[in-house]
Image 1 (cartoon, rainbow, N blue to C red):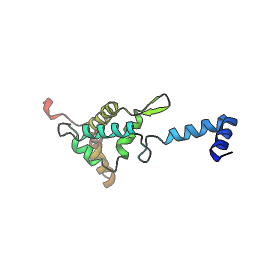
Image 2: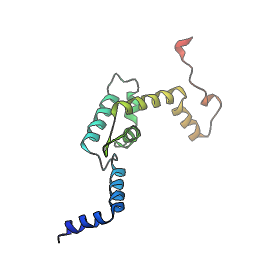
Image 3: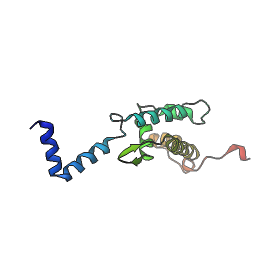
Image 4: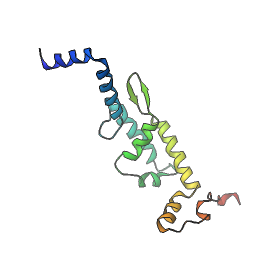
Length: 135
């Protein structure tokens, strides 16, 4: 009996082991070192939209570049499981990122991080930003 046959027989004998093996393989899917073709395409589609000069937060998106890990977090957050395949949704991830960037701007998160780093947090630092166009 070949090694492959004995492995197949062992899996048939213990379906729980096969379930655990498949679960572990799927759990790794969607990370930088383990992307399938659909996931790679959606990652590229997301980056294309984020780095489009017409996107209001393009500079914020460029500042996040640390490999693709940051963007993959958002793609995994919107991932769907279809017939055992983990499918990324670039459009949903883009919307989620856009909301995050708007929230960061509204609440001065980047300034707040600077205040915290300098030890100078004030009540003014945590107030929502005033829209100067509403005067």
